[in-house]
Structures are given as C-alpha cells and as structure tokens.
Amino acid sequence: MIDRVVNFDETKFQQRYSVKPGIDVELDALKRQYDGMNSLLTEVANSVTQDLPTWARRHIKSCIFLPQLGFLTVVEQDSQQMDGGFDLECTNDGQWKKSFVDNEKAYYKNRHMTDLDNQYGDIYSQISDREVEVMQKLAVDIIAQENTLLAAATICGEFDALLALAIGATKYGWNAPQMTTENIIDIKGGRHPLQELLAPSFIPNDCLIGDDNTTPGRRVQALVLTGPNQSGKSVYIKQVAAIVYLAHIGSYVPADKAVIGTVDKILTRISSRESVSSTGSTFALDLKQVSHAMKYATSRSLIILDEFGNGTTADDGVGMFTAMLDYFLSSAAQSPKVLAATHFYEIFANGYLNHHSQLALAHMEVRIDTNAVDAEDKVIYLFKLVEGYSSTSLGSQCARISGIPEIITDRAEVIGELLSRNKDLTYNWSKGIDEEADFNHVYQEIEEFLNLEPSI
Image (tube, rainbow, N blue to C red):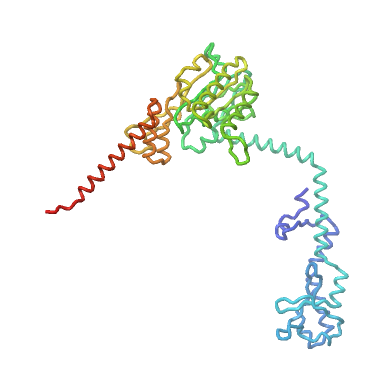
C-alpha cells in the first residue's frame, strides 16, 4: 500500500513527501500544469516583449514562477542606476511593480504576471497541499489495518527469529537438546554461544545438576566453582544458563548433547549496574537480586551467582554467601538448582557445608610454569572444569599480566602471606620499610665511594 502511493526517490530528492502518478486525479492535473510551465512561460515572455517598445525589449530576460511569489518578469538591471534597464513610465503595458533585485536582475509584477497568478495561483503550494492530503488519507487507511499489520509483523518476527536460530545452529554446529520432565540439567561438551566466536579456540565443558539416574542416591543441587581470576568461571556458569534458555525457546544448543529438564525461572546475580540515579550501593543491589531469587525460586528454578558478596567486607561476604548456600541446600524438595562462582575459599576449609551431600565443588584448571620469564607465560589457563576446589586466586599473577608494576605485586604477595598467617602486619610492614631504607643508604655510600677520584 505504501509503496504503491509514495514515490521514494522523488521524496528523497525534494525532501518532502511525493506521490506517484495515477493515485489522485486532481494531483496529476496540477503536476501536468506545473511540468508544462516552461513552455507556457516562454510564450508569455514573448507576449510581454511584444507590448514593449522595440528599444526596451532587449532588457526582458525571461518569465519565471517562484513558489509563494507567483509569476514574475525578469528584467536586466542597470548597474549604474540600479533600476530597470528602461524607463517603465514610457511603457504601454500598465503598471510594473518591482518585487526584488538579485544578481543584477530585477523581478517585476505586471499585467501579464497578474493574469497568470489569477489563472493558476500558487500551483507549487497547491501540489504540496494536495500531496499532504493524499498522505493523510494513506495514514488513515494504514491505521484501519492496524490489527492485521501487527499480526503480520508478529508472525514475521517469529519467523525471522526461528530462521536465525536455524541458520546459527547449522553454521556453528549446534545440536538438538532433549527436553524432559525430570528435574535435571545434563550437558555434554557445552560451549558459550558468544565466547566461542571470539576466542581462537574454545574448551567445552560438561555440567550435571539435579537428579542423576546413573548414580543411585546422587543428587547434586548446587555446584560451586573456584579458581584463579580469568580462568573461565563466569563464562562457564553463563554458558549453562544460555544453553538452558535456548533449549526452552525451541532452539538447538551449543553442546554435543544436552538433556534439559523444564525450568520455570532463571534467576541471576551476575552483575550489578551502577548508576548515579540508583540509590543503593553495589552490595545493596546484589542483595536485592539474591532476595528476589530466594523469594521466587522453586525446585524447578536455576539460580546463577557470580562473585556474590564481593561488595562488602570479606567476613560479611563469606558469611552471607555461606548462609545463602545453606538456605538453598536446606530447602529439601523445594531446593533450586544453583550454579555459583566464588573466591571465598575459607568456606570449604572450615567444613561448614560438608554435611550437604547435594553440594558439589569444582574449579577451572590452571598450570603454573615456574621457569617462564614473562608474567604472561607463568599462568597457563586450561579452561577445563575439574572436581574439587582451588585454594588460590593467583591475583598477583593476574595483576602482572594486566600490567601492574612488579614492585606492587611483589609487595601484595608479602602482605597476603602475612595476613594468611595472622602475622602483625604493622610490625612487618615497618620492618620491611626500614630494611629497604638501610639497603638504599648502603647502596648510596658504595656508589659515592666508587665515584671518588684518587688524590695520589
């Protein structure tokens, strides 16, 4: 309907709506008159010159039409007198009225121009007004079909989404998941749908949460991941959530095999968006997200927690994270499936959660190359999920890789070691400063001695 009425090329050229021929009879007639204006004006210019004395005819250049101003006669301007090139009082063509002057030309109204104005009017404005009326009628006709158009747009949108999922599944090697009523998430060779496109190589990982029919009595409800920074913990828990979501919308999934039990909600505490307009702190926003998850989670829910508790003191963060895990694991038949990543290793050292058989621990494997010279080569990330928890985050190594000076990372390692052994940080810190000052003093004296010139 729109394409049949609107002339898009002409609309772009004129910077206003333009209607195609054959849509409106009156508009077509106006446009034919306007298109034939050049030949008409040539005839009128000849008539104007015939009414003038012979000596004045050479000053008449042409007749033109200007929107809003109408028809005008163009007269050559006298550069000395800044007036018409002839004495208008001597003409027999009635009154000539100068409209404006531009580029050594004067534009006049006279009897002939007035007759054309009366006959044709402002034809350009008439065309514009008529096209506006046609466009308004088109808008009314479109609005009348609103329900049909919205239904068609919805169908096209769904078809476009399904087509995109099908193309993506074929292009990236996704496989059809098996949906089941069992409360289980069993993924073999799972991959992150976006991360694998950015990385030169991607290491797939498995995931098993929920009822495990292969091992009687084994029912993992919560999987807690540990491991160094940048080892792939966040990518892993997000890829599980993405696979579960894709399976529920009818898509193939980035995995070798996936058995997905129906999930009613995916509740996350992944990242808190900070804004000057928000009134709460980062930790307060985290607590709101977790509170929402605790309130609405069921046994069919999947909860994703990434570094919860980092926005407050270490003791408070550990306490909140541990108590939250204990709450979810103690909910019996209503226990949701939980995937969490954390650096709170002390949770597992004191054995507080050991009585929960539904809790599984895993970490992302890394290797340390002590012979490597560059900081980037000392930590080798394998991005492989293995059982058990890791007791180190390798924060100083990650800091070196990120470009933090070694004088800072070395001192950070010393402080971390002192804190882990409950040593007096103030005493040892001041002692280290004193030793460094003594060393610098001795070094300066040796340098001054070597620079001495012999007096013999």
